[in-house]
Image 1 (cartoon, rainbow, N blue to C red):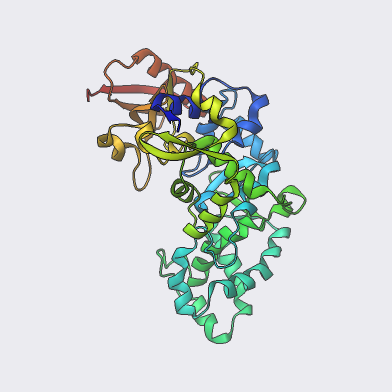
Image 2: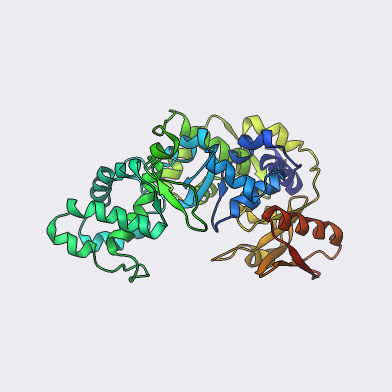
Length: 396
């Protein structure tokens, strides 16, 4: 069995994630379609795109959404994801649960369903009856979306359940959300997979929502091999990988993950990676064994960049002591990367006249001038003045 080194894996993944060199606007679809660009917290996808194609500033990136070359919708792990509109079925309908499988991001709905004494499929069937109303309107703000759709569904419920539906939420913000609104919030993920809800343009800092049909002018078209194509994207960007890592990446149930994993049984090969058995697309094996040296030495990645979403974190950061500094429960800091390995973290703080950037580097030999250049480029891409950069080097 082939045994791979960490360097081979890092260099290969840098190329798969389009971080080995600077790419051009002509590469937009392959860059954004590699594995999608997460957009939570808001603006995360803009930083990720800039790190791959520097020609796209914040304003230019958002114009791509406005022009509908790219689409934003709830996708992997139930998170907002930006991807090519032409690949919508791969990032949406491919995530649909089969019979007896839990839908992604819907496990928490059970408390509300228990109060309503209704099952998931029953509520989803009612929701599917009212969602086409989004074909004719655009709704501003997620909270308004939840409560508006909950209001549409209310008349379809038995009288005894309507009172419970309108009670304050048990999930937080009871002054702003009802139990019905909370149920809808969970159910919007299956609706997104069916093309019934997508993100529209932002109004100032507030997102808007409508249907796929209303936004793009046609219903979501599904190719029969969309789920296979999604699996190829995962193994291409994150291989060598395991079934467990696929399940974590998708945020799906073990049953759904196993079904999808088995789709590529004849297209993958087993290798030894970092002392464990993992799998790779057979067609990518040569590139993995002989990866090209990256042209870019240092990267200043946003905290939720797809490259940092690798589940075998020891490959990215061999020293476990630093893992909690990069992968946190609420909001991750940015990562300073050298030749594919994380060597530090960074954060930015907005002030009235611009931003300041703080860096903590664990390798004292890191090139200060290059880090300063990266900080300046980041601020410029956001159209913000860089006030100061504070670099702290802490030896391991």
